[in-house]
Amino acid sequence: MSSTVKDRPVASHTGGRPAGPPRPGLLPLLAAAALGCTVLSAWSIDFAPATLLNGLDEIWALLDRMLPPRLDDPGRIGVLAVETLLMAVLGTVLAAIASVPLAFLAARNTTPHPAVYAVARAIITFCRAMPDLLFAVLFVRALGIGVLPGILALALHSIGMLGKLFADAIEQTDPGPREAVRSTGVGYLREMVNAVVPQAIPSWIGTFIYRVDINLRMSVVLGFVGAGGIGFALQDALRGLIYPRALGIVLVILAVIAAMELVAIAVRRMLLTPAVSNPRRDRAMRFGFCGLLIGLTVAALLVLKINPLSLLTWVGPSIDVFARMIPPNFATLGGALFEATVQTVAIGVVATAIGIVLSIPVGILAARNITPNAAMYWAARGWILLVRAVPELILAVIFVAALGLGPVAGTCALAIGSIGFLAKLVADSIEEIDPGPIEAVHSVGGGWWKTLFSAVIPQAMPAMVGSSLYMFDVNIRTSTILGIVGAGGIGFLLFESIRTLNFDVAGAIVIVIFVVVYAIERLSGWIRSRLV
Image (cartoon, rainbow, N blue to C red; front, side, top):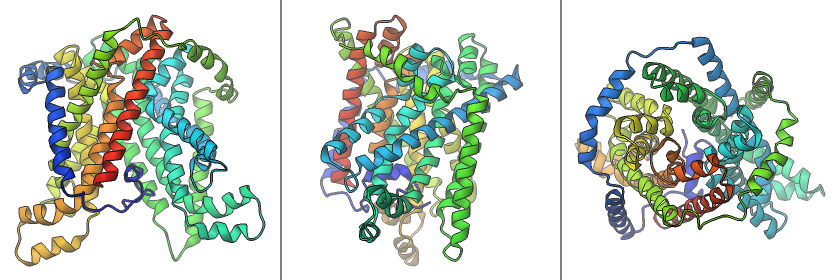
């Protein structure tokens, strides 16, 4: 795949600028600061290699109790899996519909006024900063148990990503066609539709497909809070300690997510690889994609039994619940809120550090242009797919069962998820490097290791730094909700406050989560702008 925003939305965190070498002196300083923060964070949550070694026996014992996997009711699990997939599609479609006009308002070159730009960007930032599981909990409280709260949670959180990347794509369009259309005297709307949308469409398609892939993973765990999908059946099996059934459901989830990822890759390549000699094929495929999307949306409404009016009438009950969080009550929790916040950040720091260290070797072996042989390539790619297919919250449940309650279990779960995600980004970035330096090293008789350290890593380093910072940003968001299964962090306090109807306390926690996530996002963005 290309490294552009069009083909890989994750790469947009570099801001659309061409990657260059990190600024001299800053990278070692960042590495030293990261090492210090990691050691301090590990100490604060009592995370030590000895702790993991002592827990290996419990982990193997738990895995042994899961075997052999079984499905007691395959029909029901199959229906729930289809519901989960349709929830992901419908949630992404709703988010895309809302994100397109929001993106025009949030793009500097199309916004009608700076004040409108600021408001639109604030909405996007809020949706991106708040975890989807938190939205789901609040919607379940407002609307009741079912798939609708899950769909709305996915949609709102997706606006944060789609709105930002849609706006970035608009800002990167060529102004020439706009000037040509404007010279004909048409209005603002015609100018946008005729000159901007055709340029942004390829990027929007790539971003949309990628977001469906993300939302499928997210929709799996929404059942943990009663928001529909296969996650409810998994939670039921885990709560009843029926581990073979739980493993059977996890394998179904893995198969669905893996299949979806393969389909997404195929669709992305088909739609985003231009056929210069056959533009009609391009138009036909895009119309076909739109038709398929409309069909899936209608199927989702019918299968999930969603009344289209409910997609509008949810606002009133939800505002009632959200309003009960104001004014926030910071006094009730006192120091416990601060301690939980620090623990949440520590979990994210340690998990990201472990993910960075362990993902680089896997990513190198998974890069087609540098891997020693085909067997290692497929083994590494298979491992990445396997790890990425299991959501972190499910991993957290497993580690809590094996290691006990606390931040160590959450850190392990988040670290494994980071390995899969970062290894894929590392592999993709290595596959996109200039082959010239590699050929130069080979021409003077350099071996595999010489090629790796002289020609590969120096070129891939900027992308690896940017991906690591992006992963840290994501991990901080994820660590805020691990407490729902007892894996440490501020999430436990949040879900307890909502469960006991202390919405004013929940309001205080939500504000703290937003501030922490936003601050980390700004910090990582600032570092990226200096290093990448």
